[in-house]
Length: 106
Image (cartoon, rainbow, N blue to C red; front, side, top):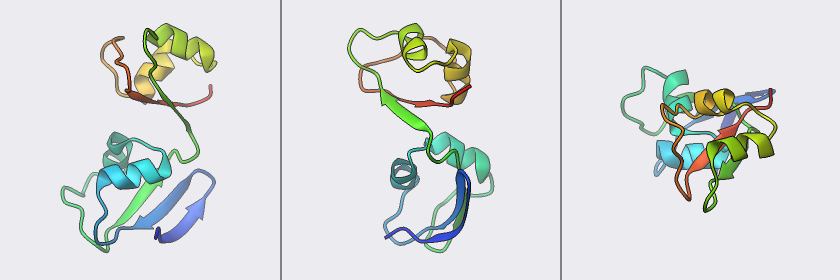
């Protein structure tokens, strides 16, 4: 069960529990692990009782389909390729089938 300490528009304070991982928390809130680490730079190890700031909740998450390009994904979702690359910490335009991408509306 997720325990929310405090909630605002698109962010929450979350208290971790036994069995939590950064990946499971990210998946639950539909955010990426990198954004959790960016918002919580002092956490090198996750343990029960850690209070984490989770931002970007409610953002759209898409999964790359066969033969899709970054340009097509950006166009389909009404964002620029540069915004998509920045939001997902991409240094290359290469994407792979099954890769999750997070969308911020411009």
